[in-house]
Image: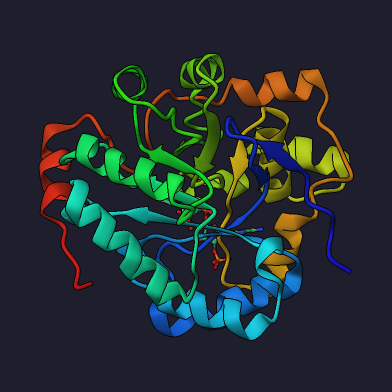
Length: 286
Ligand code: NDP
């Protein structure tokens, strides 16, 4: 029996499951099996991207599952090479074709680079045309996000940003809340970096609840109103990561985890010029 996953209402009224399943760094060969297992475990919200080059495999798993389309919440993302109004429109159609869907639930600008204004115009139109139920962004720092919001018609429904105990994004969170943009956290388990799973503070809190560190971290994010999309290739961990709705961290435990924030990315600095230049050159065949 699948757990009941709570939803959050986005700024356009669309309901988004607060816990989903991410497929970054899952190869096309592996993704069909992994998503099939995730759907069997009870996930209904899947987060992919054109740049992950596994949309077709995700689509095959969705089709084979037999799960009704309106029970699923499918996100994909537009890569920098397809930025701009005309390229973004074509890229969305290619993603839909690969996924075997006639609409997405959420379409995100993957990175705040290239012609994001052109992309956003295409996404606003796609949203109006019913090709996606919601549109949003990813990896936007507040300055770029506010600029986008203040000079366009549609406010992004979501900003998907790196968020975990070592990079908590509390200032970003406050601005997102103020602007009505849902905070979605990528890399919620810190991508396994920096010894997250053996952190003594997290181990102690997890033990107090008879839960794992992964479950404790996901619970902490959910209690902060952050949507989470953990990835695992292993069915037992998929189930573990879903089993986070039967306990609650105390205010004191939330405060203890707050002390772990380093204020810096463990993965990728979206404000480092060399990193921005490198990302802009990343290309894949579509
Ligand atoms: P996560 O923080 O989800 O960590 C995944 C790692 O944790 C894997 O090595 C996995 O190993 C391990 N893991 C998962 N569950 C457990 C567990 N219960 N116990 C121990 N280890 C565990 O990293 P991701 O980078 O995958 O982030 C999640 C999703 O966010 C992505 O898949 C993607 O959809 C999205 N994302 C978006 C980005 C963006 O730019 N918008 C950037 C990066 C990610 P194993 O698989 O072996 O279980």
